[in-house]
Image (cartoon, rainbow over all chains, first blue to last red; front, side):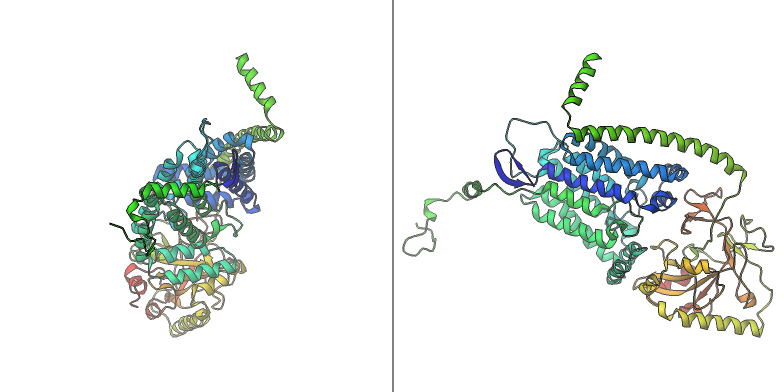
Length: 339
Length: 275
């Protein structure tokens, strides 16, 4: 939370989101320092699987990248970790926010292309449950939303979401949210995600290599969804569309943002196993925290104290102009119109 | 130009200590990245030259047989690129390399030994009826966990070198059925790469290898070779292990106890819960 100007009310500003993003980048950098990733595992188990099922050109470029990394995995991994830690620290320092955000966007898009195989979107089997459309793309999107816009003389609207401080504004932020969730809804409808065993299979896949407690949790969830992949996909697709389009078509965006955060949290725990951070080979926390951060960037702020009552009154007057006839009668006090 | 330098100097002077450290570190990492890229390119060039004169190194292999579809006994159409030391192999069109077995029906002793193996494996696999029990015991997916069938490997067992130990199978095979994972059977490896295991059941227990699998460095099947016989993902399994399935799922155990792969029609009743 930060304060802005004279008002002392805490506000979810762009700065808060920048700090959150910086913490995630720092976590990425620290995960990249895991011993496993200084060996062939990085190329073979992190990069190469992204080439699976991709069109020829994409498969070739991802494979080539994996090949280059496998030549000197320790050196390359050290560079990767350093860049991510630098982006994280840069976002935490006010003076370096802009270059850090620029680096964040550029690096994230590079990772999205070569490390995540464009979120597997071109394979026909990308699933939001397992992390589509890719965490790196969301790093870039959030970075863009909270890019420090040129300052204007007008005082900021303290009820506006953090994204309103950025170049795309609140409306742009809502459009990004809609694109993300409608896109995820469409991905749920892919044939590969609508088979009876798809959801259970994806959760089982996430359990692989996890510690016992998480593996048991995943397997229990997998059993719950066994044979219910088709219905789960359709219901979740519909829910995703509502979550995405809700903030665009209604005035109250927070219910949709909260629902989106909850669903993203479910994906994160059961389909992404916390980004496989507990396997010793995870390189990022996956999409769950990024979707939540994106929601935070769009979350409407409360009006500052003192102005709240005035704002409510003004809004009530605006929405319900009370005619004299609606005044309660002293006798009954029931508010029955007096004619 | 001089004004640009002047402006840069002014901005640098106005920059705080932390930001200066950040910029310096960024420049250092950028330089390190350029040097690393150069080193990788140079090393790669020399490695390529060496690789052209050497053989591919590989690791134990196991097949994603049941997802391949089609008949497992289709006619031999290609020559094997694996295990030239094993003579008289039969190479199937789906990339399977069948080890030689005695011709003719099994003897009574061979039939008895085969039946005993199935019974022992069936008994020992009771504890792995649920996939969670297998993963708790250290079995991890060695093929696509979303496939119709998934081979789960216990790499510690693979390292032990045990051959045909019914109590300690190297692989367990589960089907992703509409009701959840269902145990189909076990798979055993031969004693060493390109060495088939013992034919305890004569013609019944025919070992097989695969010459078209692409493996990750952790032995996972990550794809199949393309039409030119190379892997776009992973490494071609040139020195593969021979393997033997023992199916214990009731609908398979009657007639397909040791079949190298399963066809879709054989799997369909199991996947849909009709078996």
